[in-house]
Each structure stands twice: as structure tokens, then as C-alpha cells.
Length: 364
Image (cartoon, rainbow, N blue to C red):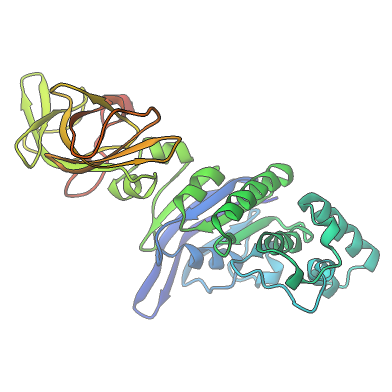
């Protein structure tokens, strides 16, 4: 196993800067997920770690060794791609052992390594089959097995679940987590899916436009997003955002929404009178009350969705559209007028101009 360290790495294509001065340390044995929207640079960054993409500036270290100028096959890494990249004419056993055969390992050693990996992944009954006889999930496990047999310092996953349907994605996601738990090999995993990131990563790195917006544990990013982008990207359904102006009257601090209504802000919020802020609250951090309150939003229900396990309300408020999620089934229907009471402990405030998080007493 080995750590991965990026020191001020950059990647440019002429005047187009794709990766912009990224520094990151992934500890030995960590499962790190690089996540962000399409075009944010996450796959490029992964390829730079692998050595498949030349670095314009900076350094890459794997297991405390500078590999910036080292060719990919000598970096002691193994990649699993979105496409399974299996040889159609080879059996599962031959596909899994091909890289070892090219390294001129003894046949008995190759068979042992393949058998060990097959046992780990539940592929033993499939070893003599061809790829055309396998399901998508089985092919992806073969691709992972081909990486495992090499026993690398680092696994690199480039959106490996994108070709699978929703049910298979959930299944293989669990298999990858279990694989990491057993092997404890440092892993870097790229996805555009924030649910994959939240459920798989011990460490999540959110990227946008070639820069790191925030890095930390899944709950740290969910509970204390550094800026509006991270707050909006992490979490499903998306966090609610209400824009307004801070009004301080003595010891009472409120937010004036666009319709002129006032909403109480958490005590200890580090805001100034007249400051333009974004009030953000996650859909599950809301209660329904049946009377007007200074800490509640008047809302008109525009749609109700019942999934069986929960209930989603879509509403119009004085601050704009608002979504809320409830585990209990409420006697609420489309067209009803209700009041939504955000839990003050779940309120996030961001500066409207910079998008940066505004500290409050609970952050300390």
C-alpha cells in the first residue's frame, strides 16, 4: 500500500488550463473519491496520477517516491476503467492473468494469483467463460480482478459503474467497498455521482473547473460545506437556497426575503446588518407547522411525491422554490398553504457575493 501526494500539479493544453495548482494528500490505505460535474478535471487528475497524462507543472508522489517522470507501468498502480476492456477471445482466467503473463511470471504463480482474486470476487465458477457469456456486473468484476492480481500500491477507478444499470451499480458499489475493506489498498475513485461519492468514500474531493473546492470526510462536506457550490453539489435532493438581506434589530437577527417577509437566523451568526446572504437548508432539516411563526416560512404546496419510504413536498415560498423531505406521511396535498420551519441547527449561511460559508457559533 502507499500514499498518494500531489504537489501543485497543473495541466494545460496551450492556453487552456485544465488542472490549476492542485495539492492533495491521500493517506495510505484511504478510499478517496474525486467527484464533480462533467469537465471539472477529475478524470484528467486520475490520469496524471497514473502517468497517462503528462503533467505541465508540479509533482506526483506514490508511496513517498517521486513518480512524476516515471512511466505508468513502473508506478505500481492498477486501473479499472468505465469500459471493461476485456479481450473477447480470452477466457476470464486468461484476461485476469494476461498482465502477469506479459511480466513473464511462472504459470503456477499466475494461476495462484488468479485463483486468489477469483475467490475474493466470487468469480471461480466463471473462470473458463468468455466475456460475451458474462453480465455487465460480472465483466466489471473481471476487470477488477485483473487489477487485483497485480497487488499494486494504488488502485485507480475511472467511473467504473457508469455502464451498469441502477440495481447493478448498487450491488457492485457494495462489492468495491467490501474489496477495499479486505485489501486495504489505497484507492482513488472518479465519479460524477455524488451519491456514489457519499456512500463509498472515506475521503471526498470536490472539484470544479480544475480546482479543489473542498476535501474531507463525507459528513464534513455534508454538514459543513465550504461554499455554495459544495452545498449544492453534495446532497440529494439538492439543498434549498433562499437569498435575502440581513436585518439586525437589537438582539434579533432575521433575513428579509424577496417578498419582504422575515425569517429568523441562528443565534451567533457572523453577519452584518444589510449583508446579502444565501440561507441554505437541506430538505430533511425542516418541520411542518400549522401556524405562522417568526422562524417559519409561509409556503404553498405545488406538488407532493410519495415514494413509500418518504414524502417529498415541493412548495413556493416568499424566497422562492423549496423542497422538503419527511419520513412520516403528512396529511398535505397540492394547493395547501402550510408553514415550513427549518431546524436552526441545520441552517447554513453563505455570503451572496463570494459564495463562501459564513461562520456561526456552532462551527466553533
